[in-house]
Amino acid sequence: MIAIVDYQAGNLASVKKAFDHLGYEAVITANPEEIARASKVVLPGVGNFGATTALNGALHEAIAKAIDRHTPLLGICLGMQWMFESSQEAPRLRGLGLFPGECEKFPPTVKSPHVGWNQLQVHRASRLLRDLPQDSFVYFTHSYRAPVAEATVGQCEYGGAFSAVVELGQVFGVQFHPEKSGAAGLQLLRNFCEL
Figure 1 (cartoon, rainbow, N blue to C red):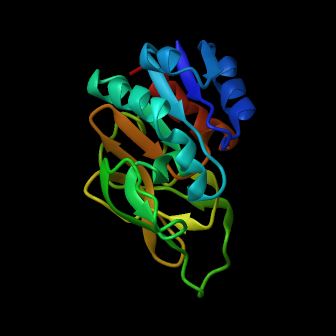
Figure 2: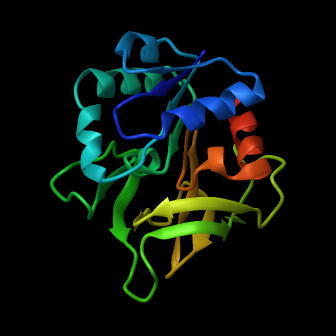
């Protein structure tokens, strides 16, 4: 069973509909016990980095236990940004710290938020990106961006390069919304389900 973590900051219904469409059982839950025993965990997110304060306490502990058990974890948009150390959007808050660096605001040379389709540039082989055509277009909506890190397997250009996909062991993150990215997004979610 796939646990979609409900911390009041995600587009939960559309993420669940995508898994339903692919034929995989997924539940939306804020129950730490359900998250800790799930076969896969998805951490969606929309909005301000400050919303991640809801992931403190029991939810944080359940996610940490899932990571320790090598349960596949997928962060989407804000969920991916939370996997980094911090964000300029809420400088006093700490992220999960799985990836080094701070998420930063787009430079004033480009329109922010970055909303719409952008081309995904694949860096290297990735289980999450398996069978996705090189230079696939995916759908974004965000005002802050994650830095390019050692774990970056795919990036995009918008006012400079930023991480669009990160992968480290069983931990994955995407800055874009696969549930709104057509065939490419569904293939990515299918790859996650088949891990």
